[in-house]
Image (cartoon, rainbow, N blue to C red; front, side, top):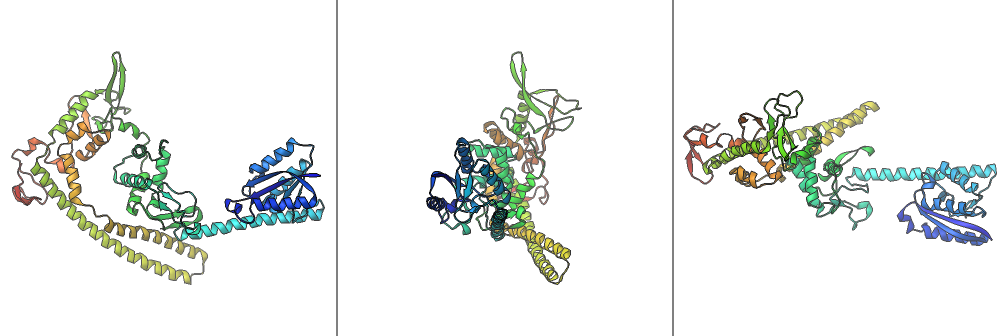
Amino acid sequence: MQKSLIYCRVSSERQKNEGHGLDSQEHRCREYASQKSFEVEKVFRDSFTGGGDFLKRPAMSEMLDYMDSKPYNQYVIIFDDIKRLARDTEQHLKLKGAIKLRGATVECPNFVFTDSPEGKYVETIMAAGAELEREQNRRQVLQKMKARMEMGYWCLPALPPAYKHNKNTPTSNSIPVLREPEAGIVKEVLEGFASGRFIEQVDVQNFLQSKRFKGDKPIYLEQVKRILKDSLFYAGYIEYKPWEVSIRKAQHEPLIDMATHERIQEKLSGKVTTHTKQFLNPDFPLRGFCLCVACKLPMTASWSTGRNGKFPYYRCKTRGCIERNKSVSKKRIEADFVSILAKIKPSEQVINLSKAIVRDVWSKKEHGVLLRRKGIETELSQIATEQRRLLERITRASDDKVIAVYETRIGKLTEHELVLKESLMSFNKHRPNIETALDIVFDFLKNPLVQWEKGDIHRKKLVLKLVFEQKLAYNRKSGFETAILSLPLRIFALPEAQKGVLVEMPGIEPGCNRNLPNGSTTIARF
């Protein structure tokens, strides 16, 4: 009997379970072999797309190797349909040649292969038709996916962390849903990076690692960067430039608001610091904060090896600086810094007065926010008016270039409109509790020395950020120069400044009575 091999192929998992799946193909091929009195020696089954190099198909490559191992057999290769060879004209002809080179022939139930000029012509036309059908199917799929994405549905298989595909809904209506606990962790990361809690991307990396975001697997900075770059998706919007899908409201539930997304992107577009990891070294908490007195640039720090061991030093490394490589011991510079923190002990009356001043500032800020909200509403009204005017002009325009300009302008207006609407919604969603914030901050500032001595490297960095408005310059001979403290501590911090000195603040007359939060009054004299 003539020996034969059967080759079956589908291009998707879905086709395995449908009528033209692998089992049905094999059945048709076996029926054909039985009618022809062929002996089926082996069956090769592939689940691979018809486009591209046929050698990349595992089963096809295996079948060619199998024929090479038995060169004395002249097989008949049975396909269910001519399209199963290759849905690509060039690959079809190459595969046909590769089979013929091995002394084999091809047959299928619904097409007769011949070597006549007419037969080769018809075969080429059939292969070209299969390629055309494949390209048309691909185009239709992409068009449908683009239309779905324009409606706000995310159609691509890959999803940013914290989301997963909803298996309880049909694929055509699938909306990504939040995945816990990843969603809570990512939300904390995004809001923390936007607010400054995480200063650099390496801080986010350490946080994700501490939360075991990926289990025992390490977290790389590239993964952090992808999470931050996907903040638009996390804000509840989608955009896909390869398909010319502009930014629009998505169907999935957001994690953050648009204002947080914009702050994240502003930080990412700024100067990228690639060496920030060294600033978090617990051995040198003042590195990056202390400035050289000569060049006013941050000092570095490291361990130096001597005869009796290693010794920690701070030093300036700026080229051309007169203080370059002149070291200051860690013990000395940090002792001088601690002496500054030890003097910062504002009294309870000072704290209360500072809170009252901050409340006044906050009240003015809220008034500014109200004005900003009215300004956004006015701007939205102007955008709507301009959009209507442009749409009217498009209907009357006949020049394609003019129409393209109008469409581009309408697209930009729509994007700006989305941002403004999101900002308007955020005014209502996020109204921080000023009293809670004041209690947290001023409890921290009551005794920053305690926070410094008992805290880890992250808390120490927070002390530097809350207590001092600017970095401190250090002189090897005289110590730190005058420290510029943060607003709540700038005037009231040092005990020497609290002895019989009249304090003058904008809006507060010296010696006048001032209502404190507890209902009592005091004179602004310290």
